[in-house]
Length: 166
Image 1 (cartoon, helix red, strand yellow):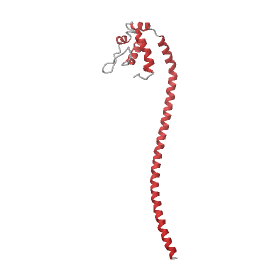
Image 2 (cartoon, one colour; image 1 turned 45 degrees about the vertical axis):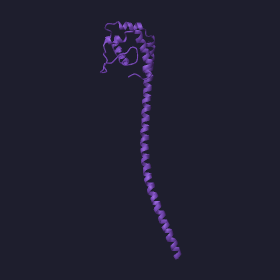
Image 3 (tube, helix red, strand yellow; image 1 turned 90 degrees about the vertical axis):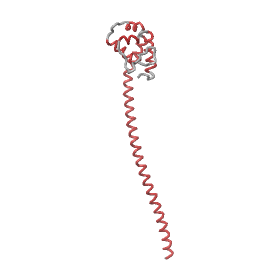
Image 4 (cartoon, helix red, strand yellow; image 1 turned 30 degrees about the vertical axis):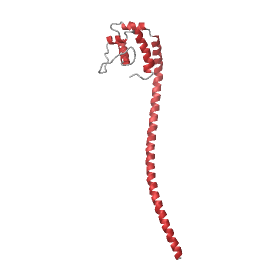
């Protein structure tokens, strides 16, 4: 019986050592599990944000595509009119002493579009960034009707399509 007690004492020591090792491993696993759970929660938040962003982008894309679909017939119509535009029409406008307000507004808009753009018909902004929107300055832009018509066509093909419009 004494021999059996000795064996039990040795086994008890071994079991206590294994138990202590298991408790250490358990503590490490517990810490690691907490870290993984935090990272998993953080990843879930990021995933939710990504899903929301994707949904927002898809909605914006659909909205923009809808607006483009509505605008494209007008753009096509305008490009067709621009292709048929004759420098004589521009020459007529250039020779107006005091044109209709709508004509002035269109020319002022073109002046803004042509400001500091690499075209023959340039408009230079003042150092303060402002453009002198007057009929005499607009007439300078259309001083050479042929060049002006060519620049309008070039602007549509290069500036707009290459996203160079400021």
